[in-house]
Image 1: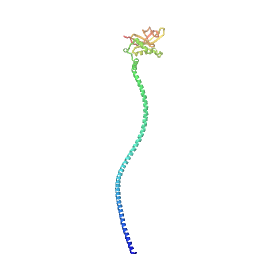
Image 2: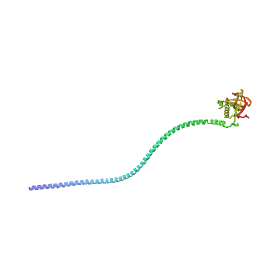
Image 3: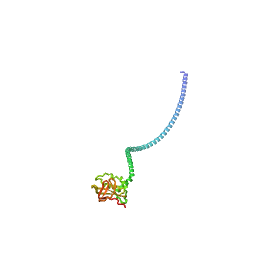
Image 4: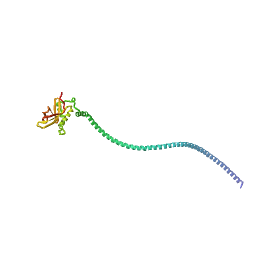
Length: 287
């Protein structure tokens, strides 16, 4: 090979080597720059990761503390829950008991309400009866004085004697007016249940209600035509004198009536007296 070619080749080789070395240096610089940039980026990333790690650790510590706190709260709540469950069971048992008691009380209430309704009706009825009785009582009370006075008069006539200082003497007119009002003569003569003696005794008792001392007398004798005459009637002393009363017709007549003598008797005519009997005494002569 010619020397020029070798030289040329050598020069070319040198050039290529220089270029290669230059290129290598440039590549190394580029790679160094890139590595430096990557290193710086990695350093920043590490710093960021370390910062995040610290933050995560702090958050973890905080969360761990919060977890412990929550765990303690959970334990307390769990205990409270257990206590509340027990209380709930007790309350539930009380509720069931109260429900049963309420049902029983409700039934009792309706029974009492029915009884109350019945009693209210009875009360209304009793009130109505009370008002009627009260009205009747007021009527009786209004008549009480009159009834009491009448009762006292009847009691006096039946059970007590008419004393001389209590005796009142009527006039013949007063006697006549009273006889018109008295109803003894309205009774039917019925033998042997109610005969002349019964008429005379009843009229005498009625006269006693006026404090009049009316007696009962009897005549045993004969009529003008000879028939037997046995008869009882009344005698009373008036202010004008002694008179007789036929209780079966309220006629007033006069005497004298004495044994073994004649007298006129209303309704029977002339009567001859065999025996004159004073059955019930009458007021003696006035002084």
